[in-house]
Image 1: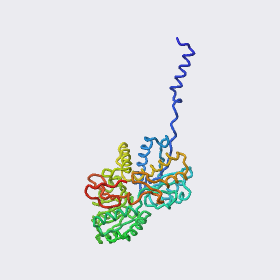
Image 2: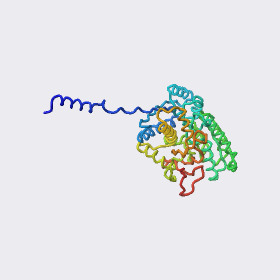
Image 3: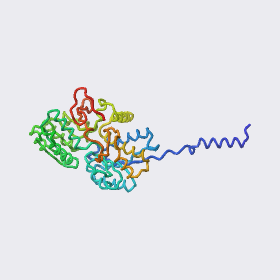
Image 4: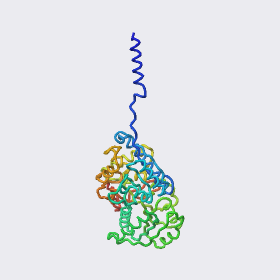
Length: 401
């Protein structure tokens, strides 16, 4: 028989071993902030970006987290309002954030950028329509509108669409597009293109019938519309009501299933997007970008989500920030993160191979743009150009890297 004292000690030891107190404490999460337009006129984009970051967190945590610590996103809603973006950014800075993701629209990013540009913290803006100063603490996601429009015009030339019209909003992203469009028309390679109509409108306008009537009278072979959120729906309504049905090219700002479903009844029959390469995954040449897209699509499939441009636009900035923190540690300071991103070269993302040493604060260029067409019957964006906008030939694969 086991002596009483030994039995008591054995029971005590078993109690300690089985006690929840004996389990190692879970590592504290690394919380990062994302300020997005979850409501308001840019809500479709903001909600898609939020979902993209949530799926990215699952991917990051399934592949080791950030030095063993799980990633958690803290989402703040700027309501598509630049003033609220500034308030939330100030709160985030005061709370001690060293890096955060900024607003989903150009106006929001431009409003918050001066708060951090010179001294930090690092802000990764979700809008491609901003041009941060070289060396600043502000970075921009996606390919700039200049390169998107350059690819679209190359596609026009290949298709023989020489009579072009432009319809843009008077907000920050529309003004950026207008400036880029006019500069590109002056380039020698675009000498064959003729601007037959140029119209603009305010984002809050509910009717553009007069502008569409003038565009229709000019008989363009293709129309560039640069607008986002509710404003582009106004343009589509105007085209539909006027019976104007010409090929339309726009940015990837509304390249989202929610937008395609919401606007289905008024979409142009030939709707093209200056897009990142993700829709061409199935016909892309092998390489590191295709490998990254494989992980991207697998993550969304596991989450039961079919991804679109909003998800993809958020994925790479989150991935780059995570890469910095994995290298430098979760406690890295803003200046360390800033130096890491500025020196990043040859980094494979879902948009392309990033090179931030160029000083453009985005790391992407014309080589990372393709033209895609919305195919409603298949619910896909089909690649119709190679990198840079040259029209695809039969059975041609899209250049991945």
